[in-house]
Length: 288
Image 1: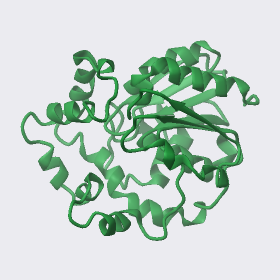
Image 2 (image 1 turned 135 degrees about the vertical axis):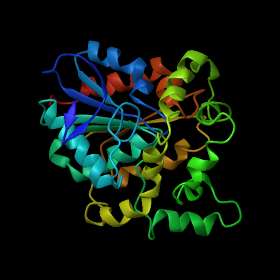
Image 3 (image 1 turned 60 degrees about the horizontal axis):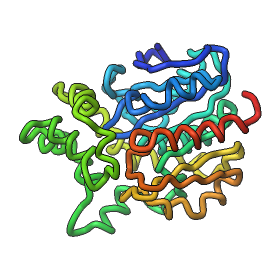
């Protein structure tokens, strides 16, 4: 699919004239991360599209600022290219960051929002990376370490390169259900991130966090008025369910679901529970 000049590799299911649902993956994932949801939601009467996000997998990897204006602008163009005016947009991890802002940037195109693990957080008083540097002075977390171009790519090339990186990312303690990631699944991710330069665009998402903070000043405080669903995982060690407290101030029509015995990779670890929560929400929405 071509959207605003970008070629996006997509998984697709359902009839083109059914209500559109976009599924956005996180880092280091792909459209493949939604493999358990695409056909299930498509078979339930929705036009379901899961793209490899710009810079990922088989989608184009332009040399641009991977900021929120570029990314959500491309996704808005994808909605139009698919022949739709409105969309329910669902996102996990980095995709979850995008969906809450998409609803604020493009309210006319937003019929609903589903956040997986990633809550809608208020805009911090200072740029987020600057804030993290103040908090993690002696032991900088990965977001800080990603900021200098080339360093993260060099470190992640050690050993077996992408293979070691993928095994680390989908292993314990982030994953509660290791059986969800057999070798055949990990091999898909390894193949996508092995080529030289494949990691740079995804890491650029992190390098634009402070830029996004500056760009979002115009819409950061907008209320999201459409019905929204927040799915949290009880055992996610990073995006803990408690982080969703207070979301109703910015997202008044919010439904919450917490999936038990689930780590960070929710839709892959607990697909049946994830599908049930998404379908219950989608079927209650007014038509779009």
